[in-house]
Image (cartoon, rainbow, N blue to C red; front, side, top):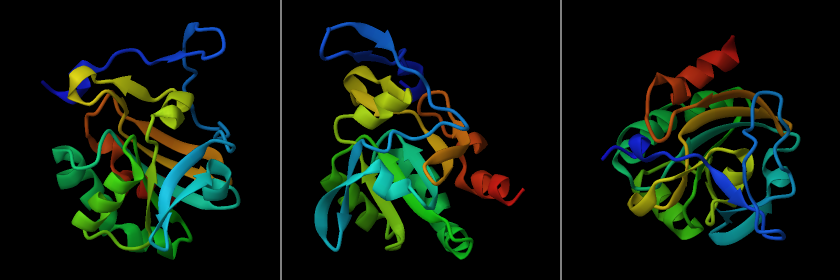
Amino acid sequence: MVLSSMLRISTKLDRAGGRRFLSNMIGVGSLLPLEMKLETFVDGQKTERSVGEIFKGKNVAVCGVPGAFTPTCSDKHVPEYIKCIATYKSKGIETTCFSVNDAFVMKAWKKSLAAPEELIMLSDGNGDFASQLGISMDTGGFGGTRSRRFAMYVEDGIVKILNLEEGGAFTEKSSMLKLLDQINE
């Protein structure tokens, strides 16, 4: 069964009141939730960093994928991104890859892809960040809560471009080459 066919409406449990409500979806012009935390590796050490530390005062491209080591992510989406990282860097744009996986999986995946050091792997272990952005999806037994596939460009914590796929599909819409073209326009 295709990942995108398992998409269900994203809901979030309000821990204080136990209510379920639809998440507001992030869009162009939205400020990222700067206080939230993501995990990554810095100098070989697992580190928790705020979204503000990662995005504030910077230009950042984000490749968002449903899961590390999945065929589409490993064979198509991220390898395409890796090929254009030098171009992003030459434009002063930092490069990140985001997934609802733990930081150790993201580190191992980066190594398996032979990705350059410049690619920062961002781990959203519980899917809280994806849920806050309104881009989470429930894949059921396939992989639980995951992020929809996307390509995003952020300046100083504000979303400037967001190319969001339906579920886990990979089309030109979330291509990191397309995002680069949009930034150049």
